[in-house]
Length: 268
Image (tube, rainbow, N blue to C red):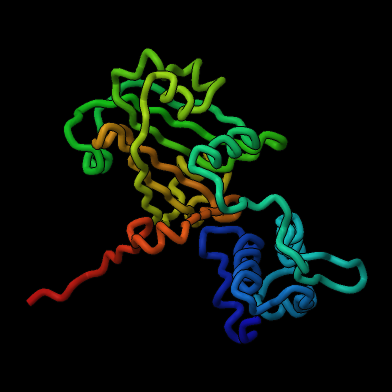
C-alpha cells in the first residue's frame, strides 16, 4: 500500500466523486499493478480509515464494491483478501469486432434518448469531411438484469439512412445489424480513446456525479474507402473497461495502435 502519510491526498471530498468510489479506485489500482497480489490481505478497516482520513462506512462501501467486482474476498471476522484468480466472465482474446458487439448486445439493453437529423457539430465534422447534416442517435446502454446505465453512445450517420435506421428499429436491433441490412459493409474502424470528466447531462444519464472520471472512445467507421459514420461513447471506468486485442501479425505490422501525445511545444 501507499505510504499512510500520502493516503489522505489520494482521497478528497473536493474531487467531485464519492469518497467510497475514490477509495475503490485507489485499491483497484493497487491490485491492478500488483502492489497487492493474489491472496494478500488488505489493511484492516481501521487502518484504511486512518490512512485515507475517511469513515468506516466509506471503507466498507469501497470494499463491498471491490468484492462485487470479484477483486477481493471478504472473510467474516478475518479480513479482506485479494482473490486468487481474476473474476470470471472477462472478455477472451480472439473474437472479432462484431463478435464483441454481439456479446455486448446479449448482456445489455438500450434506450434511445434522442433521434433526428441535425447539423453536424464542428468536432464531428473534423473527423468526417464533406457533410453539413447527419442523422443523430443518442443511446444509453444498460445492464440487462439491473438496469444500471453502463455507457452513452452518440452516433452520427448519413442522413439518407433515416429510412433504414429508425427509432423503432433501434429499440429492437443493434446499429451494426441495421447498417448491414442497409448494405453498409465496413472496411475498418479507427478508434481514439481519451479521458474526460462528466458534465451535468452525461452525469445524469450515467447516474454518476458531476466531475466523475470517464473514458471517451471515439470511432470513425470507413466504408468504400471513405469515412461513413462517427460514433462517440462515454463510459465509467467503475463499471466498464476498454479491452484491445492485437495479433502477432498486426503487432509486426505496427499499424494497429498508436499513442499520440498532445503536448505544448515551446515557441521560438
